[in-house]
Length: 241
Length: 310
Image 1: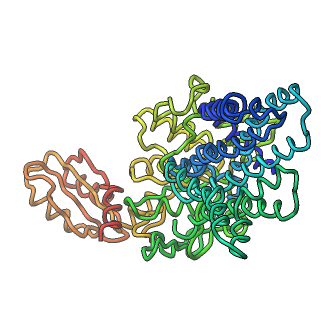
Image 2: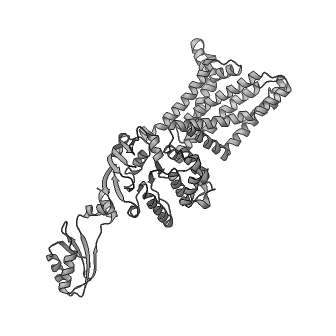
């Protein structure tokens, strides 16, 4: 676990050293803030002291931002050869993958923590359903973890960052919206299946405060699946070189 | 720490990059791993460092197998990869700290180790710079420093002096020799004088197989099998007389003129015999003056070419 943490800290440093962290934070807060407070069906228009608008916007912004964070994680290391440097040290492939996963998750966590002033502001405007706010944040964290895991997997299959970015978006797109659309346009058991596969079903259920094992199982499966496949891709060098 | 390589094979598709090689390396040896490009040097090193698993065979480092305890082995090995890839946007200090932590260097001695490495590799003036801003020679030093930071028993260096200027090459060689006194060093190169200058033993690999194994001197004797001498004489009138006299010596197998005008001869002795004393005594008898009597060594380049070009 200590090794994982060392990698996590190093990756977090590199986010902040390369400015990508700042850009991500500013863009995320800017976007979500703009739509929460100023534009469209914002808080004032709805005249309701809640963060539903923020959660809906963040759900979309994270979908685009996360692949841009994860795309370099393994692809860049492969391309520059630093993967060899890293993996010939006393760490396992699994520690490298989880270390990188945690670093991304922490950065998203920081972004979400910085949005807490929105919560405080809304609170000052009227009575807030605190439980709904916290489950909303929980939902965002679970969704983020899922996309990070998918992004890591995408980054593990290529040494080209753009390919990694597009692959992550492509895979993410299915869970983000396509399964949802398919669920709507089909009937019966098929619709049920698509609905279960759709991330938005589970996200909405979590932010409504309805968290059951089906949701948790769904998120955990996707997160673990992404990590396991990333690890498998890394260790493929043992077979084909 | 011993390294035992047992019938190691690595296939890339149908191609055998490393083909059933076996060798032992004892503690304290500096092994020069030689071979033409694509011979399998780097692949072997990648397997030794547990970056890749072999297709067949096994490597034991200090009793541990790379298949069962890669983590233990990785901790005992310091590795400088071929292209010395480093995290370009980390500073020298940060990257050394990261590697030290990940290699499990004790927190209490961490700062001291980093400082020692920086001094030893002469990185002090550059230690706060980002690695991407360093010159190639300094990057190579960072590569060496990160390989040695956890005080490993074994150092594996893939072309450690490539791209360095002559002064830096000498420095790095001295450093390697210094380290070799207490540790096992395996270095690959295709610069032959480098091997002679630093290594206590040479392994030549070609097309995935080991074609020679021994010290520089033993490879030479093996290659030529007999003594070859060069003799230069003065105060002699008749070249042919000298030629005939030399041929009559018991130990001499063959005599050849090396020059059309000067009295210079190449003398091949019979296997296992030396002609130096016989030549000297003959010249004394005839009152010929010897101005040169030296052994001709087969150059390592020739041995290398013989072994690696069919």
